[in-house]
Length: 608
Ligand code: ADP
Ligand code: ZN
Image (cartoon, rainbow, N blue to C red):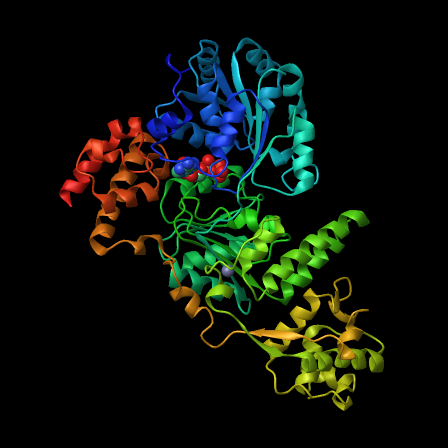
């Protein structure tokens, strides 16, 4: 409910949020929805989806109803809106009866700008009855891809949200998601919206540096990565298995890193505590399965590390997108090896799904493998996957430290013919270790038992190290030139396409990085650590501002970033505004926050 004399969207952006310009399609969405249209909004995580419904909700009469599946995060979102001076509340299962009644009363009295509701609350009898009594400005459906039955975030209640269109045909709906593929878009529009107005932002996240390293000892590499580049930073480490999550958290903690485990098998209260600490404290590393993350709003996650390869590019993009939402430098780091390929293919094989679905999964996995194996710009490939053309980015490992190639066609032929011969003489297949032993001329009990030391290919690959052979094999497997039979002890098999290599019709290039692997990537443009961008005096002031923020956040029982994001504090540290008026120029300082916190900010600056 705005005072008479409707303010413009720009005026609200400036006065409430303290931002100077709209980003990407924000403005177009706001105009469309404020005028009563339905919209599908596709923006990467951190792209700024919230404003796309918050501002139209303020521009239209009535309360904006926000449907969000993430109960744990509603509280923070509402707290952030209240910090901005807006009237917001939520209804979900965490409220007791009295608190629920108070929110319902405020809604009926027209005292709310925005009301967040869990889908099951909204769809329940009392939820629908409440909505019948309200003047509704719009419905915003966050994480709208949850309607998709094919997606991994499917929520049955989301399908029932079709009722909004039937019951309130005159109220505009805006569906928002960061998951972009075309079938999902159709499903969302078909189920939730009236017309198909789509607003798509660029999916580029230029501040995220993408890096893929060859996995040798993944855990040691992870530790080294964090210690060398992210000490004291907030980050997320993704692992495939729950037990890996727990082991890695213990390992990191043993090295003085504040690491917490998170997966669906942990007791609910422990999950809640760990999530709370991650959101509220600075510098926590969350080690988690992908059960952790949808909608994580924390803006200052400085790195996302994958210890196991995700099963699709969508997954990779969504998970890495949780880094650097504040726009400051952040890293996406993935350790990837032969075992990842084998494991992911096996998971598909054992999934018990029908063949169509398995084929879909296999092709998604192949795209992910191609990205991991890529020798050219990773961002170009990533964006290309989402249908967006771009040029080499200068901020990924391959741009910063282009790999060298050696022609490995002959080595590949040696490997393939060894595979063939071993199977011929013994009538059975063998796994990678054995094949590599034969290639490198390493005899042992198994080699001798099968008489493989007498094969003509025994020892013909002694000039290459075991890890080079593994890297080559990994590339061959990724390209379906060798199959791994996951159901039979991971034995290797030739495929139809192997022949082209054996006949010399297909060349194989092996990617190699020099001994300085990664070093150049670290020294590349843009510091990996956000705070390094500041001069030492500014950095000192930034730290003081952070300390003030931590104390203030604690006092108000809100996460630190809700008070001010790092980007705003850095801007303050650099610009050192001398008056409340001068604070207006800082992005992220709206009127309410300026009045509430401005004097404290100025005091920090004056003391510096
Ligand atoms: P999403 O929901 O798309 O992941 P958010 O709506 O949470 O992203 O926005 C991400 C961050 O960007 C937030 O800190 C938000 O305040 C900020 N932001 C959004 N729009 C703008 C803008 N036009 N100018 C500056 N910052 C913005
Ligand atoms: Zn690049």
